[in-house]
Length: 377
Image (tube, rainbow, N blue to C red; front, top):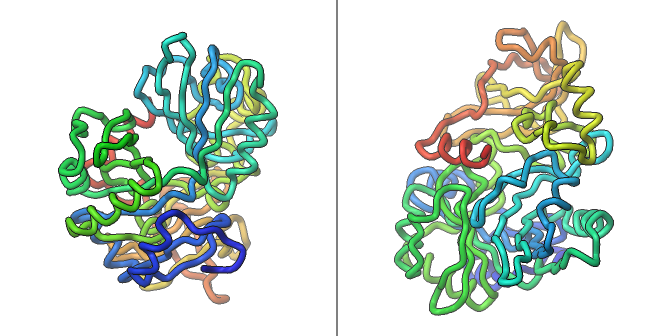
């Protein structure tokens, strides 16, 4: 185990597979097993699985749960139906992004109490918990943190759903993208969410630890490839998905980060709404853009972006895309320069390298547009 990190309930499985491990968000997590490129291709071409048990997992309940959460996110949760999920963000008063999250609306208990789940980032779990407890009415909203009590496994790729279906009587095809429901795995309770962080179709499955260990082995037996954080990063970047702490932070706003589709200013006031209103009227000063590097030069996180020899922006994420066979990157640049065709350079090892502009996402896989459309709902 890496120093100062906690194991997930699947740590024994990672050790058996001789995974390369690292401390990520306070958790001992696999970076890779057989290699990032091979794992990446397995998800794009067949099926891969990820241990994402490190993610924060909160269970919430209350008579006005969605109404209270409405004050903390820019998205409109009021129209969600039971079994629907919504991607959104927590904001500070300056409209900086405190974290991105998915809210899963479970529906109503027998007494009419609204119920739901929040899945947040591992590194921000404690911060998010404190933020929620500070702003939610403790007399009305029940809050349970099950982050360390549940296994969460993502199964992603063209073959993911068919493979997972062989292990459960729950009709997975009936669960549409960005929908979720309870079901059974090995005759035990399980929760299936048709969401993910790869751009591919698939499910994220939450179960008790022993069932999670059994699921991991059953998927291995069906030749589903175990994948680490390295492949998860290359996959999400190809799909144009932001990484909290790099592409979005508490000093970037949804409008700057290309997440304006999350914002519904008509729903009423929420934390950050005044700042967003002003930015909408004036326009953001900077924007997140996509770049493709020429040759084998990789623009890494924090590399400077230049215009006419002057630093005008910064690379937030960059990697080599196994699907495209090219280096890709996200960068913040001033809005007047955030148009295709503007001549920019990236400073790599002291030398300016000329990128090509790229629309986002960098790739479009068969299910990506469907998934993106549903998370916009």
